[in-house]
Structure formats: structure tokens, C-alpha cells
Length: 257
Image (tube, rainbow, N blue to C red; front, side, top):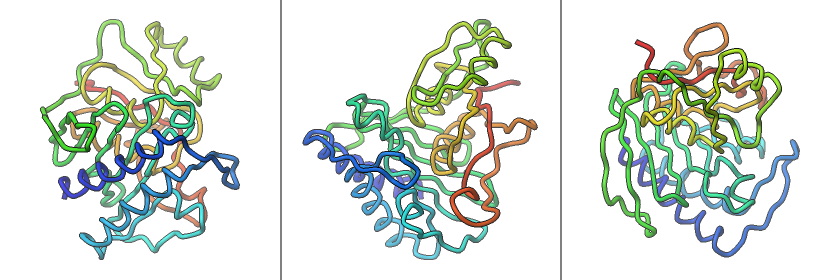
């Protein structure tokens, strides 16, 4: 499965980069968040690949949900964010990603994160996490195993580039986190997974599709993502509408024991 998900993400990334080079046309959804034709093209590519290869597994995808399409969910389902970090994409930055994850009984068990502008991708499944080097044509050139690290004596904290809040700043101060790096999109999970950072506190709204793929990579690399009660972040759809797909506040981190 992970190879199929990876190829779908790479194909979607090629469509995104075509728009990136031409310059995106930006519109706004009902919640005032931006969307471009790159989001829509990438999601179409991913949904077609998932339907072709896994027709019996339902898919929750960001742009489809924005248009009112929320499928009936069983014990396992896919979560898709075709372009995480749309604000970074529009601003011409390189920290935007393609995200595909498989959820089983509330747990992200397989995930792919692809950063096409950086030529890097990360995968996680069955306690195996890898970082891939990807060519400008979307071909995998190299791959190597990655593991999260034990927290450093001077931990490196990752902070959302676009969604840092007063609560986040208070957490950073309370825990003496002096080395903070601002990063967009799900790349924060991947940096934890490859052992170059230690903690990512998030105290502003995220949706399940924003985090599931990166969370899958991090868990496969030996890290974890906990809600504020200390329980593993659960991907369980309860209720109706987009609010049922929102995450609680959480803290993602590398190895702790």
C-alpha cells in the first residue's frame, strides 16, 4: 500500500509544481481559508488513484469536504490533504506538502508526506519510516530509514509559521524552549521523525487531514502525538460537519524512552 500512496502523492506534487511555476489563482472558501487550482488538481489525482486501487476504503479529502462530500466512515479510511500549507504555497515559500494517510480504528497506520518544492518525501508504515529524495520529475532517487531522537538537552521546538498563538508562546516559555523554529505544514512532524527536532506543540485549530500523514510517519519513526490529556491523538469521526473532523490541541514529540 505505501508504494501506491507514495506514487499518488508524487503525481499530485507534479501537478502542484506546474501551478507553482505558472502562478496560482487564489479563491477563498466559506471559512475564509485560501484555495488554488493546485489544491483541486492534486486532490483529483489522489482520489482517482485511491479509487482505482482501494475502491472499498472511503476517503475524507479536504476539498471534497469543503464541497459537502463526507462519506460514511468504517473502521478504516483515508485522510487526504492535497496541499497542506496553502498560505506558504501562495507566498512562494517551499514548506507546503501533499498528505495521504490510512486510518485504522482511529490510528494513523500508514502515511506519506511529500514536499515537492524541496524534493523530499517521508513515509511511515509498520514501524518503518523513510525519507526519500525525489527528482524534479517526481522520481525517487534515494531513500533511507529515519528514527526520531531522544529529546536533546536543549530541545528544538517547532512552531507553526502561520498559526502561532499566545498559548503556544506560553507553553514555550513555561518549558524553557529557547530554540524555536517556525515551519509550515506537516513538515514539522517529518522533522521530528528524522531526528532534527524534539517537540511540536499545537494549540490552534487543525483538521484530521492536516496531521494524519505526518503523524503516521512520526509514530513509525518512534515518536508520538498526544492530546492535552496525555492520550494518543485519535482520528475518530464523531458527529457531523467539518467540526467532527477537527483535532483537539496536541503535542507531537520524538522518543521519550
